[in-house]
View 1 (cartoon, helix red, strand yellow):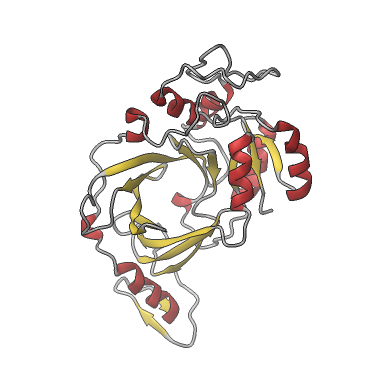
View 2: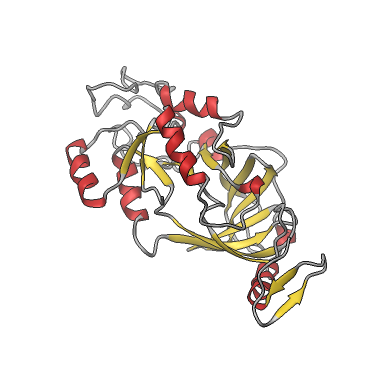
Length: 306
């Protein structure tokens, strides 16, 4: 693969041409203690198993992906912000995402990293994202996405869906801000990426498992600090629509999770009903609350890029 070069260029060890800016980004990407971050041997969504990170006041349903708290405001918010509400499990929903996938912002994104990704076991209200194909990256990457270092970043507004529910609206409005974005380093040689956060640059790590699966791991501390190997949060990035917009082997599972009732229904709610009883989950424990929060709403708030 031949890259565009500026006036100043260099040649990488694999014979590919890169610009000075890309070489500089690669040096930045290499400047990280990658040896301190190794993929966990097994997948363990510890926040679900231990019931950590559970929302406060969970006896009142303001937190679930099906919550209609303050729903009278939803039409007004749609009018103000212009977000779409899409039934993503329908054919129209697939077609809408297919258009986004086939018009990526990142034209250099490897085919293996393109597509629509489901944030499975993330009990936040974020669900479907064109993560890699709509990001901005610089570095010495090969066409296959299996080698090279660099940096990457992405805004949280476009093609980043949230549940059509109370908390989903909060996240959607927050994500629409101009400053709402993430940045990090990429090490595609080892299949590891970082996402920088307020607590440091080495806490949020994403590991490539295969072309259709990555694991996002949150550690308790940065490399070299006490507790730097302790995992406090873990979920999956699962590709549900491929780079051609066709469903992968994981689509049916996503559809089932989104269309079915919540696994723990408490006092009888948790399905898609016109009636909503705010205290239906008062008898749920923290583990059950977190498991419910992982189930997506089939109706998603989306700000499409194209």
